[in-house]
Image (cartoon, rainbow, N blue to C red):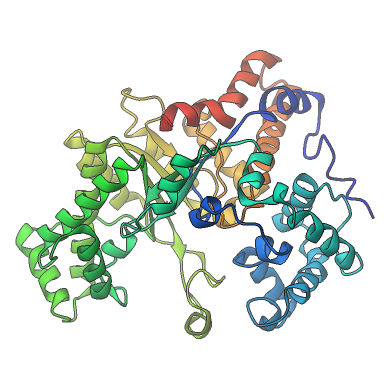
Length: 466
């Protein structure tokens, strides 16, 4: 059966939406300014053995769906053959209707492989073989997969200890897609995590600093920020449950860090004071370098302790958290702004109940110095679907300026995830087209089309100055 619902006007419900998408959004290049693609695979221009390797391995969205259907872990992350894993995913797909996975699956099959059959148990063998033949061609190498979707910039995410050797190789290679990096220092911030001291030892070794005090830690991180900056880095990212902002003194923070380095227990309030201090230091340093800082807030991670012990983090056991966000975030941004050290900032919200909180918060610190200086990031993780995108767009429209929005990203580990940009652009164009049809917006396609082009591409191009 053909996927006739994935057609030229998929998700576009009237002529205005169609015109906006096809004339102003569809052909814009992609700036994917936050993802988790492995740069080594891009640098080596890896060719994948089969569709399981490029599409299912590492994709905890698919894993959660398969587990919910009762698929044994052997066929998800276990030792089953790649063919059997794909077949079990194919069996699952018909049951994902109304989950974004159903749309994404068929968009990706269509856009990358020209396959317009519905994926299910009956079509699995045929589709596995058809994709196998294509993936074993150089036309489907990592670099060519990025070219296929008109990617202009992709920004991966690296720990401060990373050598950036693969980014350096790519910078010299002449590859037409710019591959940048974002600095992700969470392991240096989260002092209560297991293995913290071992990580600080590694950071000190890489940074050329014996880290015995808080000042040493700041020096080590500053050294790595400088190294990343010299390698073209313009962004950082933090995955936190909430922003930390506890009052602290310099002596308190030094004492807390010393205590940790001596492998002594630290209390929750001590951890929060330390995390507040290091986060402020980092943000002031980002301002010094002119970087964009990103904060992904609101995830409740590693909920299933048994499966976390077996499989580790980032394997599908996370959910939306209900952390208080407003007061600490306000105090943190205000502390930086008061010193005129608040750099460009993107705040991603995972709890839809906080959309309006975040949409109004950014307006407190947009001071007229830079267009869209503080941004409400696109719907991410559990919210990067039609309903989540629409709610984010509506909150930002109602309480800010949607025209200044820097648009979508994949936040993905998969080289086949880039049709999410198309998905977002279709949702955006349909939202605006529907309001034109209802008379809530003027039939000024040229102006609204410019806004669509800006959100799809030009605003990000200007904001990041890639």
